[in-house]
Every structure is written in C-alpha cells, then in structure tokens.
Length: 436
Image 1 (cartoon, rainbow, N blue to C red):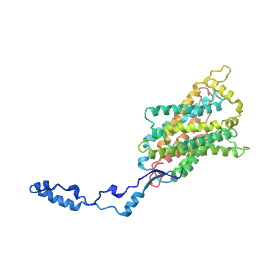
Image 2: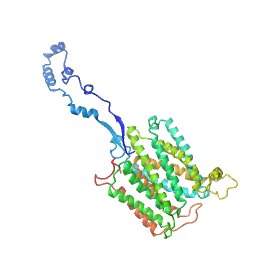
Image 3: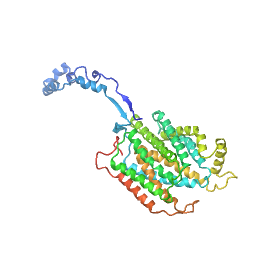
Image 4: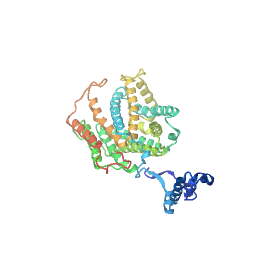
C-alpha cells in the first residue's frame, strides 16, 4: 500500500514530433510570388510587415538536456508521501462535509439505539442478527450496484479497479469481528465502548503510515480529547470500581487489536478512493463498488470463520443450523414456540434499515473527507446514544439518571470536536493531500 504506484507513463516522444522540421517558420507566412508581385504595389506595408515577421519569428530547438528531462519524466502517485494531484481530488466542500457529518451522526445514533431495541426481541439471538447483517447486506449491496451499473452511474472502469484491496478489507473486517467477539465474551460490558475508542488512535497512526498524512499538534490533541471525553462519559456507568480486576490482559488486548483491524480496513477504503480518483480522472468511484465488494469479501472470510465464531458465542457448530432457524423465526415473529419476541419484526427491521443507511452515509463521508473525520463524527453518537437510552423508550420503559462524569465527558468530547474543526491559521497543518 505504502509503495509508489505507477499510474501512467509518457510514451517516448522525440522532439521532432513536437516541433517543425526546421526552426525557421517563414514558410508559414510566405505568399505565392505571382500573387505577391501583383499586390505589392498596393499593399507595400504588408510586405514590410511580412519581412519583419519572418525575421523575428524563429523557434529555437529545445536544448538536449531539457528534452531528455522532459522525455524521462514519469507521473506517479504515492499513498505514503506524494500529494494527490488537484485534478484527482474528490474532497467536497466544507458545506457538503458538514451536511454529511450531521446526517452520519444522526444515523449513528439511530443505529445504536435501534440495535439496543432490536435486541429486546432477539436477546437470545444476537449471533443470528450479526450473521444476518453480514450475509444479507451482500445481496442488498450487489443488487443496488447492479441497478446503478445498468443506469450508467457505475461504469465499467469503476468495476475494473483492482480487487485485491477488497480482499484485504474483507480479511481485516473479519479478523476484527472475530477478535471483538472473542474478547467481548470475557470482559465486562461497560469496558467495551471504552476500549473501542482506541479505534481513533489506530486511525491516526495508520493514516500516517499508509496514506502519509501529517497532522498538526492541535489536531492530535483534539482527537485525544474526543477519545478521553468518550471514555469519561462511558466509564461513569461502570459503578466506580475496577471493572477489569481478575481479567487476564489478553482479552482487553484482543479488543484493542480488533479496533486496529477495523481502523486498518477503513484506511484501506480511503486509499481505494484516493487511488481511484487518480485512475478514473474526472470521475469519482461509486461508494457501492466499495460497499459491495468489501462486504462480499468479508462474508467469505466470515463463512470460513463461522465454526470459530459460533463457538465463541457458546453455540456448538453442529447446533448452528437449528440456532439460525430459531433466530429467523424470532426475527420474523412467526414461530409458535418462540416467546419473548414481542416487537419483532418491526424493531429488527428498523435496525437493519438504520444500519444500511449508516454504512452508506459513513462511507460517503469517508470518501469526501477522511477516515479520521468519519470516526470523529461516529464517536459523537456514543454519549448521545447513552443519553437517549437512559430515557423511557418503547420496550425499554426503565430510565436511568446520568451523573456528573457523563456531563464532563460530553463537554470534553465536544471541545475536542470544536478544536479539530477550527479553521487552520497556519500553512503547516495537515496531510499530504491538503485536507485534514
């Protein structure tokens, strides 16, 4: 990824193909003699001007050293250090980024809230819901991609981009899922969202390594403030005692590693958009190309890891078909022997719809800004979701009060967002593409 990519190379053009055979261009301005003699008595000024022009307009051949330099010049783009050409940039205006940031934040909150509500009827089948999302979205995304290709939005050039990167994305996301599920079963629930905030730190580090981005001290401090704010807000729910006491270090470390896998996948997605912007020239890569092929590769890797994943959730592999059948019955609320499935299928379908919309929105925001910006926007949803879930909701009538630390963490989080998005007053800021 970090190696330089040859996008195109000039063919070897000789200087004779660029210049006339003779440096003297008087033949361009010469007039046939018969006509010239006939008109010279009446238009003598023209003759004078013609001679002056002929004497002055000569083209000197290009020097040998400059010509050799020109012919050997190659255009390259580097994901690690070289800036992306201005004509290849797909970054949108500040207003567009602000608009999509707001949409993404709203959908992120809805996604978290509806996930909690969907688990009310599916409290015994969370693994079914996760697998339904993984495999169901492949069919949905490819169906949308097919329609967009038929109507001309997605071009053949977009579909011809290298697929190896999608294989890497799928592998990283599948490994992140496996690591997250393994560790989530061994550590307390309140610690999980705290450890998830290392995702932002991984993104900063990996965008520096893979994309060659450079961040100002102000931006780094702002990102750390956001992460610290979320940690303080979420940790206020832990009850004030050491929640990791007696838990082997390997499980929190595995949760942190899952964040690294997901962060790396998001950085590779951003790299796909950056590289495609240069390859497709005036066109922008459609987000459903990335969504479809990325989800497809992830589903293939998850399929291979299915025995391991099912055992992590306490489901023997030989009992997995029966578990999935019962989960589907509860999801649709059609099985007679299923109890406690009240709220299905409405609540699960609301979660599926909000999750699809969120995934599309966050990928679109990543395309027009960066992985770090999309991560910051997503992190805003954490304290907002906690606040909404503390209120009485349908199927969740119990409410809870939020303490001082929640408010303090939210204030710190918002101060970090404001600091990150303040206008830059120095040209020293930012990354290799000129965007933060």
